Image 1 (tube, rainbow, N blue to C red):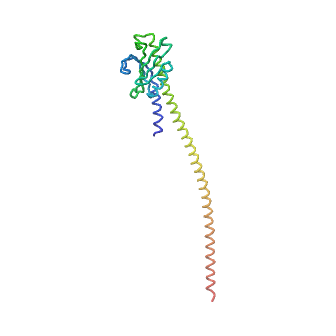
Image 2 (image 1 turned 90 degrees about the horizontal axis):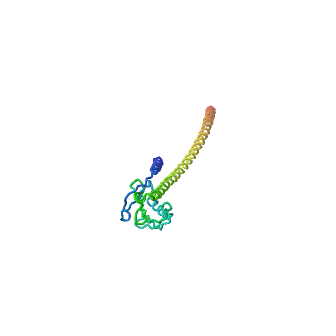
Length: 219
């Protein structure tokens, strides 16, 4: 039963990771302060994996990264966001059974990135978060594919083993059939030998009877 359930769990997990990715703008409390932020849920992901990957993303943006109460990227740079550097405040938290929620606030220098105040730069910030979420969602599926491949490999090995067992059993049956045929031949020979021996016994009994009669006739 376990072997039947496991593939279904893997397929279910992969299906969950295929949900459409949406970046949402909202006010969120980050490090005790309410900031205009971008939020995205990465289905099926692990919080620690996302933290590690997001810190790498901030380093790729040339930021100096620290991870204390929040993941902070200092003096990040991106051509799509303009010539000025910016700071990034972010948190990663479990999103119930759905996966992991990444919340990101871009500090452009006194103001946090928003559609209302930065209509020219907001799409670039949203794309950074969106592209990251897409790649991490793909990574979730890649891991599921790897795990499914391992399970499949195990099943294939078991199938090969079963085939070998079947061959062995078939060989045993052939050996047993051969032994049965040999035994049947031996039985037939034994029956014939018993008949011959029975005749010999009957002949010897008749000879003994004649000798006894001869013995009694001597007076």
